[in-house]
Image (cartoon, rainbow, N blue to C red; front, side):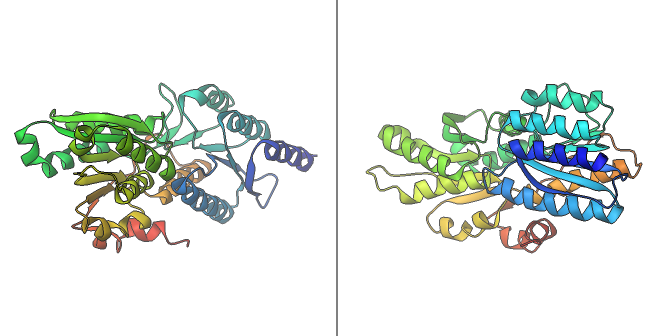
Length: 335
């Protein structure tokens, strides 16, 4: 009977989402559910691959059953939460679409006395068992410090105009932006800011539109571009490289987060065009740490509070060394 109920619940989840994996050795084994957004950009796609592999590997090594779910909107993700709560999950690892909009659904997990690990996008004023985000405040703060040092002479002479390309409206961009502006010199002036939904193509179109629709003085005044993601930075850089208008571009620095293979492979290419880059590392493989916390809960270990994923500065001076290091190696170990 229990097998039939589980099958019906999986079918219900599949009707509103993608079920990547469901398995286990024993109906009576402890059960871990991992719930994530579906891949809308490369970072999420990499994260899903790492998370799916880790969920299967760690659950099976420890003799636990598991279910791995993704969906493409908040309503479907809420339905998935209902499904795993009804199935009687013993722990849930949740990467919310947008934490605050999912707060009510997430509360049902806690109301059922199920431990909850929240990853990446946080839920404000919420009493989850534990949360594991990137150290986004520090990423922003260090980005601000880097801009200060890079544009030291320009800042001493007066205002320095920049653009900001954010990810979405979740906690992640808010923390990165607030961190940046907590350390960035007051002479930095944001001429325009954009919300990209983490999309390279969207960022490229937004940058192209800015270049083609603003005055000569505005376009030529931009010296730095602060983006929240490597894919977004790649889109911005492609627009700068492809520009064939009448204005002289003066962008000297483009920043981003995650230090992907794609963007690192373009460091020398864009430096030859007069544009430097700086990334702060945040790897898609870090989702494995959140899944390990879920396993730790099932193993009876004490898990609580906030676990921050550390970051590392990667610019033109050290990117080759970074690509030989453990963060980069782990990220691409499954390819």
